[in-house]
Image (cartoon, rainbow, N blue to C red; front, side, top):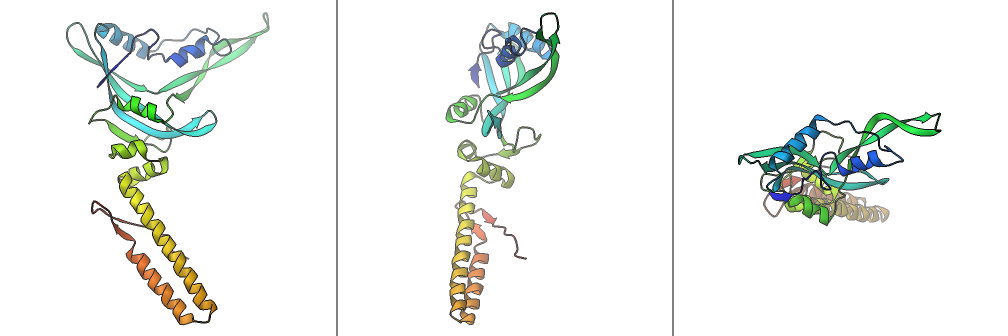
Length: 259
């Protein structure tokens, strides 16, 4: 676990600083009073009970996924954790919370005919926002709260409830998103996925070269040779469909059958 700041000043976690900013922004909330939630009380009671000693954070689940940030599809990272503190009686208390994600309020406004200004009437909705784009700095920060029990997951998008668990920690950090999805779906390491992709590409290249040589044979009138080339190539490609990786894990390449 790693120490984390959870004071209810500048480093407060609930409500998120960006939420407070939205309420105070004159073009958005314009000082509209935020309605407290039950979790506000839970957070502040936890803080007040344990504030005399440092707080620790333990990441339970770290998620890599993609979403739209500033109009572009980008990879993001966020996590679910337990923040632990010790009260004056020596008891360890925990606060479960998601970090790296918050709900920004969308305000409903109406025109004040007396002042000819729009005033906030209520909060009509919320939009889910994500803070941390995937980069080395944010990866290091998030993993500073991880331990051996932390679960790593990849999700095709944040809106999907379920994801794929990843057991290859280095692969989770370094794989591109397509590789990471394949790692999750097939339950393979990054090394296995990479080797499989290379082998599949090699089979495709072999097939392409065989087709080229067969075409040349056909053009020269040697139909028999053309058929032999195709048969041998197909046999080699079929044999290459089952590949033995460095750690002796056997995988197979699936191809669509020609109609």
